[in-house]
Each structure stands twice: as structure tokens, then as C-alpha cells.
Image (cartoon, rainbow, N blue to C red; front, side):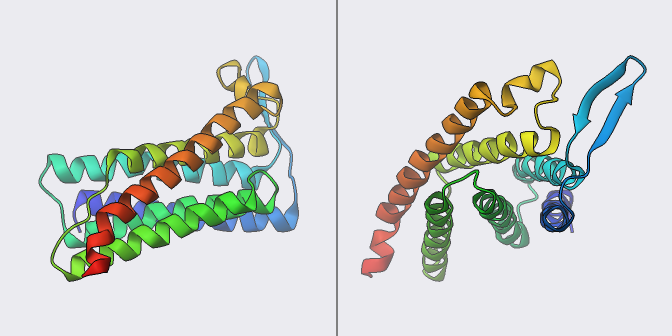
Amino acid sequence: MNLPNSITSLRLVMVVVFTVALAVGGESGHNPVAATSGAGAWFEIVSVPACVALWAFVVGAVSDFFDGYLARKCGMVTNLGKLLDPLADKILVCAAFVYLSSVGMCPFWVTALIIFREFLVTGLRQIAALKGEALAADRSGKWKTGLQLGFCIACLVPLAYGGNLPQPLRFLSIGVGGEWCRAFFLWGSVLLTIWSGTHYLIRGSRYLRS
């Protein structure tokens, strides 16, 4: 297994850590822990499981860039990587949206829309592969993924740290600024989910007709 595939596998591990942390958090509730430095309290963790889930998600999101970049840069693109990379992305994003809907931070229909789009694109890619062709990702799909990851992180940060955030991250805390930030990521990702899904459907319609 080469380095890009190892990074992709790490993302799958982060998915497991993410879901287990949220499952534990749902059972045990909040577990406040103060993190202090020499100058006194810098920030406060209001939920340890949510904090673990947040950083597992961040590591998974960052690895999404590096595995593809290294695979293309170093000529290490493999069939295993082509399978695991989009699979890991979809599981990570869908797991986060299902959880955020369960705690009321994301409308249920948005999560259903995102999952439907992912199944649609996966199905079209499989049909194209059976015909010996590739339905490559487009730029709108990449922006869609970026906005989705941004929304999930913007929701997980206040769940983990509440309003006790360092100044550079204070805008993500629960309040007007945080609500505007999350709304931007959410509705931007919804628009691009519909746009990119429609674009894939148009591009893949010739496979459906044949």
C-alpha cells in the first residue's frame, strides 16, 4: 500500500473514531474539562467526546487534500485509491450530517438531499465504469465538498468548546456570528449539492439512455 492509500485508510480510521466518539457522547452527555496554561484558563472543553469527534473530523478533512495531491504529484494513482478515496469522503460527510440532523443543527431534508446526491453520483460512476469510461469529478463538486466540510466543522466547534473559544475562533461560537457562518456554509453546500448533482446527471444521462 503506497503513501496516498495509507492516508486514505487513515481517513477511514478517523471516520470510526468520529462515530464512536459521538456515540459515547450521546450516552454519557457533556463532560466538562478545563484546559489551562501558565496564564490561566485559555479555553474550556464543554464536551470531551465532541472534542475528539471534532479533531478526528478535521484530520479526516485535511487528509482528503493530501492523498489526492500526493497520488497525482508522485504518479501513485491506483485502482484501490480510486475506490477508497471517494468512499471515505462520502462516509465521513454523511456520518457528520446524520449526527448534526439528530441534534437539530441541520434540517433533516438537507441530510437526505446530500445522501441522495452521493448515491446518484456513485451509481452514475459505476454505470460509466461498466462501459469503460470515467465520470470525473468537476470543480463544483470539489467546492461542494469544501462547503460541507466547513459546515460540519463550524457546527462541531461550538459543540466541543461552547462559547469559550480563543479569539481567532470566537466567530464560530454559538451566537449571531456563528449562526451566520454556519448558514453560509449550509446553504452554499445545498446550492452546490443541487448544482453538481444536476451537472453529473446531465453528463451521465447518455449512459442511462444507452
